[in-house]
Image (cartoon, rainbow, N blue to C red; front, side, top):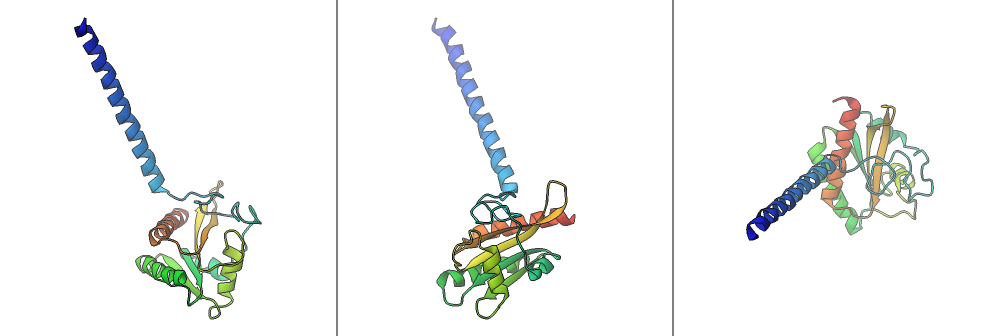
Length: 187
């Protein structure tokens, strides 16, 4: 009788092991797909926005991109840092943005905007790209790119942060912005 139970136990064990392996492969595949496009396009916190995001009082409304940003978008993705001179998070973001720009200078533009010096662009950045339109807080970092809309037309997408953002986080957004821009330009 024990001989008959042993094959059943082995079959159940094999089924469990195979199920675990299959589920692991599905999870790994999902993670890889997410890594390929970590930041989609939509209205959420971790997405590029084509209009104002859900946390903004003008949620869903068109963004009045300034002419200097539009001109820069003709040649590649854009990174903007609007900051003051003395705050520690601002100094950190200047270093992070400089490092990222050094890696991608041939394929993007970078605006390092110091308040009181680089006006009116610094004020434009704060008034237009503050994600929640709360009282202005620096540093404000913005990444702009072009994406294809549902009709296949190129539209502007952006994302912005107030305060210090980890360099690796900003770098992942810049990488995705460059991918989207390349998809739109057929490069």
